[in-house]
Image (cartoon, rainbow, N blue to C red; front, top):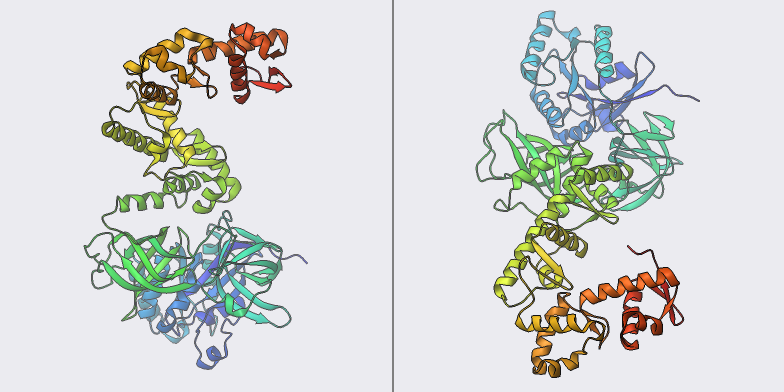
Length: 635
């Protein structure tokens, strides 16, 4: 059986209690969204209701009916999360009421940008009263996304005005941009219920990505894996579902207790429970008083709400209408992601203070004196809608640590294939570097290079007689990984700021060769392939053994001399000459043994064997019995 096409748009109601939201939804859809017995008994919506509306072109959209009573604001916020279009309902007899105002502010804070207004119960009043209420709503909506929105009087009881209202409704829906379905799947659970013979069903509106029957999802915050057994979109069986749709899922091994509101279903590995969020915050203009630097709040995000504190970046209070970056510090972890809208409400008296959108998560509380906190938040905000910027921010946030593509994708909330493409673009643009299968930001690499250069300078100043220092010396006190250290040292070397000789790293211009070293180098340069053993140096130079050993050590560390074996040391010039002679001989004769090679070098078999074994270890030659052949093309 085929179903009508679905537009990925969800409409949500908003408005004061008893202003006719549920009746209007029933008039639109034929569906009574008051499903709970207590809702029927009390004649008011307590929890969220869902319905599907058929559009003129045969498409279907979802409608979320939210409660209007002040005591159920937490349910209203949960239902408003994920909607694209708001249907603000104002009764003609009452006009704009307290929850009308609060709901209006909430949908603004949640980032909703399209909507329309229904003036309900128009059959109860004279036309002049309808015009008066319309003026009230226009005043409330001035300067907002609803300022020029369609506004239509309608009676759910008599049907008067419905055709004009429906035409405006269809026009707004048709002009609404659909959700993008990229990124990892994530759905805040809005409802869970039991169907006889099927088990527990969960429903909600996915914020990102898509899901298919058979997919494995992670139920957060517990982290348990569940398989999708069946799904519905707008009440119809489907094979897959996407962001922005009203979705119901039947999952494997699911208990009602673990699937309550506030839980999240997501692609495994992308989201973690978090207590600290960095956010953009707007203090409502009619809030009445300035916001203190640390204010106790109830934090509403997705379908979760948790107690915590809203902390300003300075000790200056934030006046009504003010906007700034803040940190939300919660008493318990919740699941949310950068870009998610949120609402902050005061605890007592309960009222909406403001809200905005999250720009990032944090692992620790804000320290107002720690670095450029606001500047980092601005970078996070810029990355919200740009996958490339999000990945670059993830690499920068990793500091002196390279990330695999999968790790960067998870931190940036970018799908795997797209992440690899964007990371390679960052490398091509010079904003990132690739180290095998891992990536790091170019900024982090430059900073590491400066840190290493500063560490080297300090070591030289503390030990001016030392010709250089090992990589372990330089890394002491730094958290950088060895691969990044090598890349940073390479960049410093290419810039002519340091020199790397053997095991030692030194500032450019500093020589490892003192008077004793120069005398030793002269000996090894003169003796060629008949160089002295280390224990022969004292007799040859007339030095004490301690002086000979002290002079030899830095030369070996810096690569000014090369130890091939315990007894054989060569000057690098002669070692390079042996390579040239070896390649030349093997290019003409295919194989060589130690006896022949000692004749080529004009030395003894002891030296010939040590040199051949050296080039075996370097991969230039390969031993077959007592002979060697070239192991690779010389380069």
